[in-house]
Length: 93
Image 1 (tube, rainbow, N blue to C red):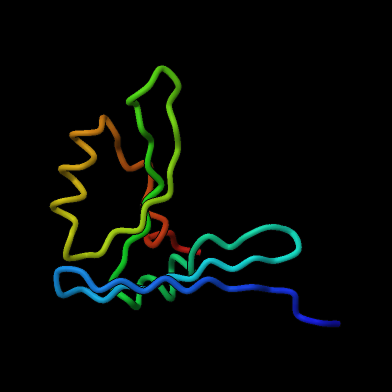
Image 2: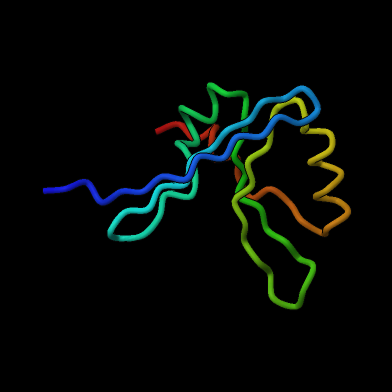
């Protein structure tokens, strides 16, 4: 059976932080990120499940935050009427 997975590699160098992430297409859908509790964590990222209350209907987002940018992320949350529901990288499985 042929491997039909296609991967998009995203690599960014900003403010002295080199960041990368993969989006992988499978026949059933997509992996939108590398693993929260392994690959991203090893690369100094935290993964947040965030609730936005900017509109009448609350919206849920997955945010990937570099550990060196937590202060900016917390300001973003406050400015955008959002909060962290849970940090996915901190789950004990």
